[in-house]
Length: 459
Image 1 (cartoon, rainbow, N blue to C red):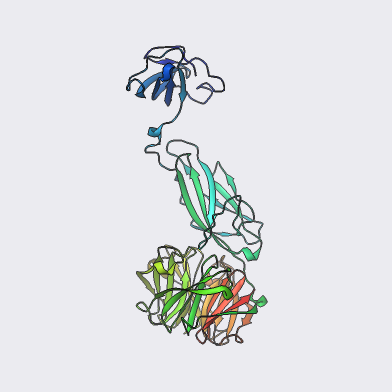
Image 2: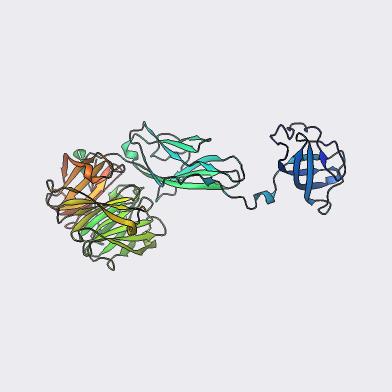
């Protein structure tokens, strides 16, 4: 704005310069404190704060910097005044704060029709408006997804309510896109950004009645002759095997996701013999920063951390373990999507037992739920366990019958609500005494104590 006063005292504003608003039109009210900048003739300048009065036309100025050595300019009629920000305005500016703690995991609808919502409402202490954006990635992949390049788990770009901070997300309807994506919601005040990462899982209830062996297998004989468990990273580009011959976890890379014919050994391994000499099961959280071993000798679950997700070379034992209810003959272990529950197959009494963790994926916070489900009618030697991502389907592998059995749960991840689907699939033609079971990429994978191979099945 131009000015109608001169000198070193208060500044009286005149009219808005061409193309600009008056201070009042821009939303400034009496008693507001603003950052003002003055430019005068002969490259003279002044920066300071001012209290606004007289219907936003008078500025009581406090000079902070000027071309006159910090003193107030003796303004001429050529001076122009505008509102701006300086580096000082950014000092001490804090990022927006979330009003509530957003969830760290969320299950997407698997039918491609129902939106799930993620509430990341935030506020800014300085009162700046907050704008919301997002990006995403899949653990084990370097690809960054956004609205112009969607992750495969999404049917469309999430819609964002900029007033409420609520993201609406619809999962893909294609079962081949099942998996987990790390979704990063961002709340920005224009200077700093607050972020929250939530693990979004898109799962489909695999029907093993449709399973077929696709004549694909991968030999692990050079690393382990008696495998007991296998696992994959979320992207299907890494595979892990453990067995009791070596008491070691081995890491492999797959050049094509979830295709074991493209697997190769990474020459990366981790011995777990100091924790248990008969490791029976292997699990990861969705980001690969936590790993768990179920040991039969000690009847306990052992917890490890990986400083780089799914990179076994960065793994170390947390000195954290949890002794199980039966403390013997536990062969299978599986976690819920958010890690607040885990399940163990007790082969001595043919039960699937349920435990809870008050902190997800932290077995130091575990306790027995006093809930279990008998699988004795299907197999007298249950050896492995898996769930779909939403916890509505459970799969049990038994080596008495060399068969995978399928169950439905009316309440997600609650084995007391389980019932047998009367659906099973025999794997005896490929291996006897199977003990390792994993799902991913619309496929099923098996290994076992009498085998030195990983077998692949289409679903």
